[in-house]
Length: 92
Length: 92
Length: 92
Length: 92
Image (tube, rainbow over all chains, first blue to last red; front, side, top):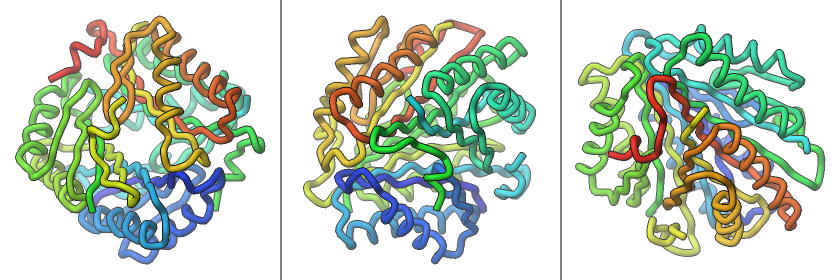
């Protein structure tokens, strides 16, 4: 089923600036069959729930493979059955 | 000290659509001495930490005064001492 | 890879009390090959990252199948490569 | 008005282990007129909303004064008007 989501990842022990990791996360999300919109606090996502969850797993695995020692991520996931959830429909 | 933040509020028992409450939250945030940017999953905020926390309290009180029975809010708050945190500085 | 997590689900439009849905979420999580610990604000989880993400998907699908119209869930997911992450290791 | 909350703080650039900072946060929260319950993913809090928000501000200020360069915190805040919210009432 389709879902909308918001994702943010924080690497621990990676220094005060985490821009490199954030850019990597966004690149990984964009490489998946998902609609993504970055903003100052995270990335909003629209797509199949299963693809979103696959992307979360892929992001954790990729960043660890590239050297990250500890990762904390936050996923907010929204689903509904009365209409198809979209990022466009959630904007004011 | 200056901070950046992300705020989202969910009213429980308010029906499947919560657009009216979300619009009210954004209007309340914009009435405060804060920089705000709405997106599909919440509102990003820049301003004095104390003003941000005051705004959170004001939002809960206002929505209850207007009839909301139960509210859950999520505040992500970022502060740093190496430079002044801004929403602009957090965008990719 | 093993992960620790925290999960919370909020049904929108389900009334002021959401205890029935929360109990259903916890029962569903406990039916999976995961270690779970409930607390006043959610459920902490330890297990394979893939199993945790599968459980999140199963919870959304089950609650919709049982009538929930709109669901918002929050998943915090932690992974690390320097040692096996456990809930026991995160307690003070 | 009384509220329940969950609080978690992550120091960026503080190393892979953040136990020292987490213990400091819990000690600071316990020094305030609040009921606190720690668990593997954060600290649950019960008390006056204003005191909870004051505590969040005090925690950020104290950790920066003690040397932390960058802090991200997550506060979930719940209020309701149909009954007094308590941590005990939220447990399963």
